[in-house]
Amino acid sequence: MSRLQAEHLFKVFGRRPEAAVPRLKSGASREELRAEGTTAAVIDASFEVEAGQIFVVMGLSGSGKSTLLRMLNGLEDPTSGRVLYDGQDLTALSPRELREVRSRNISMVFQHFALFPHRSVLENAGYGLEVRGVPRAEREERATEALHLAGLKGWEKSWPDELSGGMQQRVGLARALATDADLLLMDESFSALDPLIRRDMQDQLLDLQKRLKKTIVFITHDLNEAMRLGDRIAVMRDGRIVQNGTAEDILVRPANDYVASFIQDVDRSRVLTAGSIMERTAGVPDGAATVSAEAPVAELFAPFACNGDPVVVTDEAGRPTGVVTRDRLMAALSDRPVQRPEEVTAGA
Image (cartoon, rainbow, N blue to C red; front, side):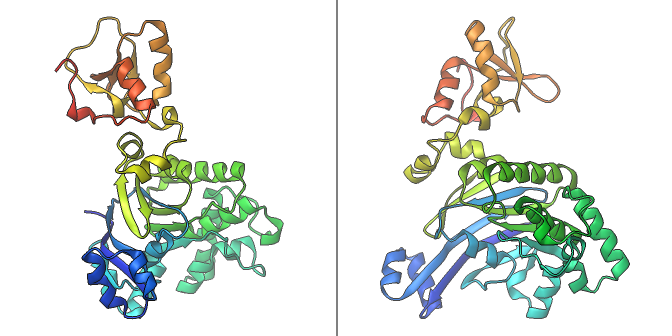
């Protein structure tokens, strides 16, 4: 079962928001409502997030992505629709019940660190546990462990103003980890950081995810960040989710011209894998080079440079599952759509 589900979420601000929902369902545009003093921030958003998955919501400023995130933990009430966490309808809970779920099951990591300057790094990391009423000794033990996971061992007694921006964001991440919440909501959490520090934080998150297997909803306006982090990516435009899929789906099968324009500058050779562009086949060419299905397509360049023969793609057990031809590779690296592996069979 999905850990988190959003079902037909709408969020409308302004006059008579409930009356705007049926109009939006009937095809009214954002611009029509805005002319009447009503703003449709999120329009009919539905998706599921599996346990242990990083689900990225990507869009430009004003696309509705942060409003969508705030509905997921009850900071904003949906105008219409439901949010379910482990099957429980969060939108039906009382304020007290919702606070209880947020304190135990859902943690937020903000863009602007939100650290208390008068508290030590350790005290900041343990703040969520303090609010929950966890005894001090246990609080400090769990906060210390979270700081170590976040790469801040030895900084427990420091003050926030003694830390770099990247280190401060690590404290924010440690504070979320210390609560041991299953669901992390991250709102543009790395966007205020310099590029090199941002890359380092992405590495840190991916490393932590391998060990902890949290369920994460990550908001970003940066496509490369989305492609690097997301198991699945939802692309938003003007309040709507216009495509929801893996990075590979979005790169090789963009849903529309808007998504296609977004992905023009992405280095496909580093994002796409051999398994995502291969053709299924029962036969294996004699003496052909092999790569794993998870290998980035950049690793196919050398075999093709040698002889140009199809490259065999293998599964985790080393069994052949398909081939990548030169034409298939060139199509994947261009802006031409590529059929899914199950849609084509070599030699058919």
